[in-house]
Amino acid sequence: MLKSVLKLFLASILVLAIFAGVFSYEIFSAGQKIFSGGEKTSIVKQLSDLIFDPVEKLQGEDDNRINILLLGIGGEKHNGGELTDTIMIASIKPQEKEAALLSIPRDMYVQIPGTNINTKINAIKSYGDKSKEKNGMELITLVAEEISGLDIQYYAQLDFQGFTKIIDDLGGIDVYLESDINDPSYPNFNNGYDPFYISKGQHLLDGAVALKVARSRHSKMGDFDRIQRQQAIIKSAKQEVFEKYEKFDILALKEILNSLGDHLKTNVQLKELPRFYKLAKEIKNHKITAEALDTKKYLNRNYVGLGYTVEAKDKSYGKIKELSENIFDLEISEERKALIQAEGASIEIQNGTGSLDLANRVAQDLEEFGYKIINSTNIVPPDFSGVIIYNNSEKLKPFTLEFLKEKFNAVIMEGLDDNSGKADFVIVLGKGF
Image 1 (tube, helix red, strand yellow):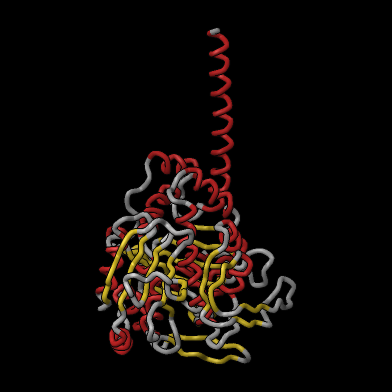
Image 2 (cartoon, rainbow, N blue to C red):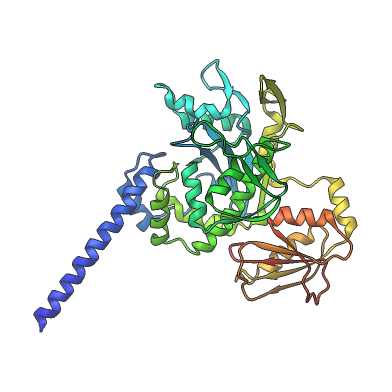
């Protein structure tokens, strides 16, 4: 009897050891591809640190400003796949639980550090990668730091295949489009065209369509419209990520790494991931500021042949650096604030997130803008992600509606049948908010 029990025990230990070995190898294999940048620490050591010694503070956290350079590239099977199609600086203020996105147009004309060569910023990394003396990621980080005046501690580069896979793995993302996209010259993989059309309004986008929405430049404002859509996609994807992965654990890590192993590059260390996850989850979408360098305040447009480039109005980037430094403290214009306050809107907040104090915290944020909060309450979690705003105002209050939609990245619906509080707008906070 004892021998049988011992054999069963040893067999169980063997099965667990094999499972753990395969499991660890999968994480090891994917991790080697993703976490190859930054400090030269072996992936085995990083895994050990992740489990036994995760970091308590990230770089920049002591200064209450963590900056991450986000890059999107085409990757394999895409023409110009080595060019950086998307360039953003994401900043986090841990103490205030706030974040900001600053988008840099890919057509911005800049000088390559250490050379006399000027080119579009989207070609900087490719130039460095092809050079024997330069490092592409270091070069584009230097340029982003020069433009913004920020110390950028981290970077993350994702290719189109990885982007598509993330969205599909999340089950799609909800995005509101401000206008139709009608792009007859959207590129395909064979130097031809794949005409793309999608109407304005709310859409559930799969990975392939989300990529087209993020990339298409065929609109009135071209790249600047595209930047706004990219920022909306990031906010929506964030909501879905934290709904799917309610906590950071080894199983979630394995799934993410296996999904993105060939498509993501970063200098973030494995041991830093739990802290990043905690900080990002604490930041709600109405606490994310999104700005872009535009041709009104910061850039001049220069036409070259059939295309164009944009250059800083101030060659020292003074205005852009001021924007970067103060992006968390930007206020809406006095004119817009007056229009909003003149509407005198009343608001009800329904919190279905499960975080019991969130309704009151959101109410306090909105009261700072002069809104009248007539009710804030917790409700049974609804079956949707993000935020829905029900418009109950008998008289249209467009300035308030536009402001709330932007602030919460919200879906707008017609008024509730049962609006007992008689609020002009009912904000319902759903899963993932």
